[in-house]
Amino acid sequence: MDLLTSVILGLVQGLTEFLPISSSGHLVLFQHLLGFQGPALAYDVMLHLGTTLAVVIYFRHDIANIFISAFTKSSSGDGRRWIIMIILASIPTALIGLLFKDQFEVMFDSPGSLAMQFWVTGLLLIITDRVRVNNNTQGNIKTHQAFFVGVAQGIAIIPAVSRSGLTIAAGVISGMSRETAARFSFLISIPAILGATLLEGKDIAGTAQIDWLPSLIGTAVAFISGYLSIGLLLRLVVKRGLWMFAVYLFVIGLLTFILV
View 1 (cartoon, rainbow, N blue to C red):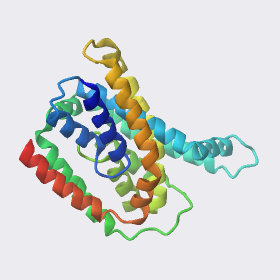
View 2 (tube, rainbow, N blue to C red):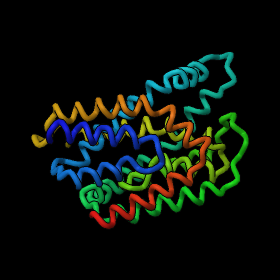
View 3 (cartoon, rainbow, N blue to C red):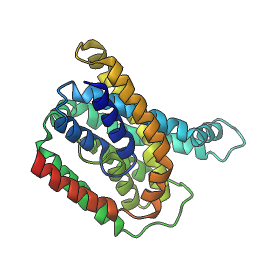
């Protein structure tokens, strides 16, 4: 991979990770259009690791407050509940990822179904936009909501099914406010991506096909672009509605159908 391709893919990852339009789907599409023949899933995991680092740094105060609240005797226990809910959501995600790992890897190497996956995500966003939003923004997440969002995150390993879009949709449909659903979506992405990185680590470290310099540059670009855009994109998801992203997904799905 040349450096320009790496920078382009890093920008694609950073700018699409936090919108409900599927960063993985865009990566598979751009890798196909740019003729990238390397180990796509391993490179995709590295770029996701860059944006996950951006999430950790951007939400560092939230993460610190959760742990402080969890281990402080005088606290209300909200931090402990958030940690429990994040763990609970991570369980179905991990099970789905482990059980269907091989099937998902084949999808990353076969871009032919991307158009349909983009359209399914767009349809889901339209349905979510019509759900009556819960005005409670206190972050009180129930057990069944966390589990439902975790299942959605596991399904979203499919390339062009947006992780943020599906998890936010699952949260809103299960009764969360958009603000709570978005915050929870970002926080549960941290163990999910780190787990995927560990799962693929042996393949990444053991292959001679990866050109590490472009890969690291792409990861750095994904981190910087993701961090700079996360605040704006989070506000768009929470306050502006999801229909505009649905329209984009229908258009990019049509282009993908024509090009791929």
